[in-house]
Amino acid sequence: MEIYNPESGASSMTMSFGAKPKLLFLFQGFALLMGLASAAAALPVAVLSFGCHGAAMFFGRVRPLRDAYELLSRAYDRVLDRLGQKILQDSRDTPALRLMVSLSLTAVPILVLQLVLGKPRLLLAMAFYLSLYGLKFQRFVRMFSASHVEAHRRQGYFSGKCEKVFGRYLEFFLAYLYGNIPELGRTAHVCLHHRENSGPDDTRNTIGYDRTSRLDFLWYLSDNIWTVLGLAPYAYFKARSDEKNRRRMFWGMARYYAYFGAVFVYDWRIGTMFVLVPLLCMNFINAITAWVQHAFCDPERPEDYFANSVTVVDEVNFMNEGYHLCHHHRASLHWTEMPVHFERIRDKMREAGSLVFRDLDFMGLFVELTLFRRMDVLAEKLVPWEPMNHEQRLALLAKRTSLKTP
Image 1 (spheres, rainbow, N blue to C red):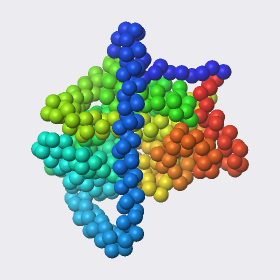
Image 2 (cartoon, rainbow, N blue to C red):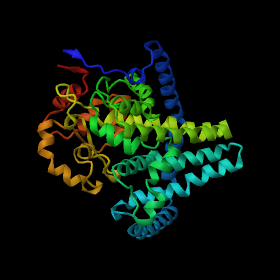
Image 3 (cartoon, helix red, strand yellow):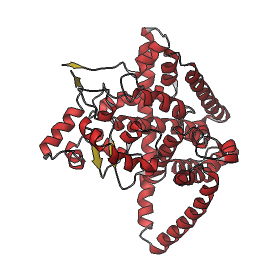
Image 4 (tube, one colour):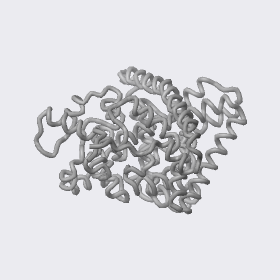
């Protein structure tokens, strides 16, 4: 048996750019610094997000307030349902429209107001973070899922004249606010991740890491910054002489870097609070998602995406993001069709040993698998294809998180 260890993100990117090996230490040092900064930036945002969720739960017990909120929410949904029928290519995508409208009416005006006022306001920054991430990070989860779906659409969500005006509205406009570089979805995700399926050449593969180790996650988080900055995907396409996608990544990075630099030139404090912090949070949350979505690879078949892609089914499964294997198997399917497709490929999933968890989302999977390492909890939530006792489930999870391959 030998340990399978792909090159670290910093190392492979360095070599792709033709840099001298002696500079690798500087690349890795910068990556580690960005990893630590990402965790530090995400912490106060998480405290704010979960703290406000607690406050909302408290006030939700006040029946008049709860009834008023539900009344307004239903009215808002009815308006968007009618609007979606007119401007969307597929009216089933109305949940994504609601997200786009909400962000456009909250995060965008807050940022514009801060730029007009000039002097940084802490309350505006807090409101900005809440508008981006929502309570318990639920708005970020929705943004992530909606952006993911949009990346696989040739023309985005909108139809007719709206498509010409708004185009890929999430990736090419709203994503700037989150620190998500243009083309990371349409180009890097679709043309790199779905080509490699989290295999050794994927810039986000986790095969060489111990997915139950907090320290390994720190290294992964640090290396992930090269993907979030667009540099690792750029190097991937450059190394393969994929000129079309290399150019796309270059201009996507150029546009975001111009935005980043312009805000910092205007006021470095605003740049830090409204641009750098979201970028670092994007790196942190993005790394968590990539870490767990392919966490349980089969050591005998590490490149088999049917084995390494995780399915999680939770009460809140926005745009069916939890059906990750179904998405890799048929990325062109509409998200509403994923549960049916899941039933269609059950036999193949059973044969491949695909792992399915119930009453769990990807964040919960990360918490139990890596943060607390509570394999007992995961064993309880695992849905085996054949009858298994608790010890057998634990053994399976241990095998599927092992670093060893034949």
